[in-house]
Image 1 (cartoon, helix red, strand yellow):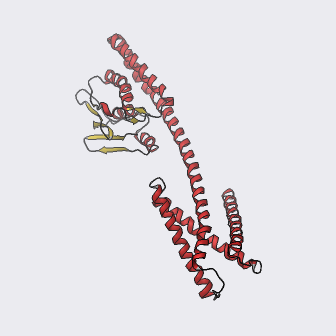
Image 2: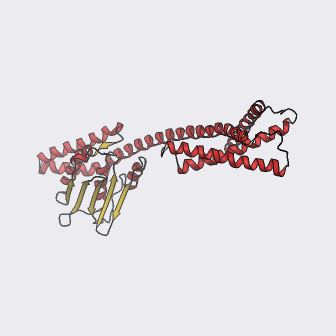
Image 3: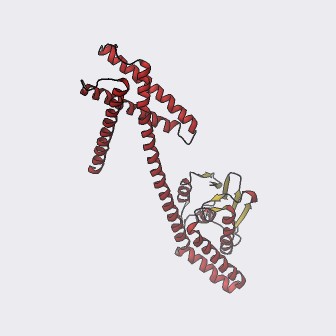
Length: 339
C-alpha cells in the first residue's frame, strides 16, 4: 500500500515539474514571439500559462484514451493520424473560446494590444502538438513493455503446458495401462508386442521433441497420433471406431502440439467403450477448424490426471484462438481454430 502511494506521489511530482517547466518555456516563447512584457506581472503570467498547459494535458489525455479504444493505430494508422489532427484543432478552438470568454467577458480585460484570434490559435496548436506527442510516446512505450511481458508470460505458459503434458503422459496410470497391455501381448501376440513397443517409443519420442516447438502442423500431429491410436487399438481392441477426414492441402495449418492426442484421451477418459457399444470418434481437418467428435457413453468412474479441456483452451487463448465445445445428449464435439 505504501509502495503504491509512494509511486503515485512520485508520478504526480514528475508531472507537476514537467508541466511547470513546459509552461515556463511557453511563457518565454510567447514573450519573444508576441513581444510581451511578462516580468511586470510574472506570477500572473506563470499561472495563466500553467493553466493552459494543464488544461491541454487533460484534454489530450482524454483524446488519446478515446482514440486508443475506438481507433487504435493497428486498425488504420492514416485514419488515426487524421483523427488526432481533427481532435487537436477542436481542443484548441474550444479551449481558446473558453479562455477568451473568461478573459474578455468575465474578467473584463480590454482587447487592445492583445494578439488576434488567429495568432492565439496558432500558439495553442504549437503548444498542444508536443503534449500530444508525449502522451503518444508514453502510451507506445507502455504498450511495448506490456507486449514484452505478455510474450514472456506466453512462453512460460507454453513451457508449463509442455511440462504438464509430459507429466500427464508419464503418470503411473498411463504407464501401468501401457505396460499391462504390453505384457499381455508378449505372450499372446509377440509381433503386436513389438509393434506396441515401437508405438510407445514413438509417442514418447514425439512428446520429448516438443521442447522447442510451441506449434506443429496438423500433418505432424496426425502422424504422431497414428502411434497413439495403435496403442489404444491394442488396449480397447474393437471397442472404438475412428473416422479420419483429411484434407491434404489444409494439413500445413498450425495447432498446439498434442492437441489431438489430448482430445482423444479425453474421449476415452469420460466414456465407456465396449465391443457391444463402441465409441465412434470422428476427426475432421476442415477449412476453418480441426474438429473431434464422439458419441456420448458416460463413464461412472472418470480417470484422474491428464491435462483437461479447460487447460487446452487456455493455451489457445494465448494465441487469441478459441476452442469451441458443442454438446448434445448424443454427441460431444470440439472445434479447434487453427493458429
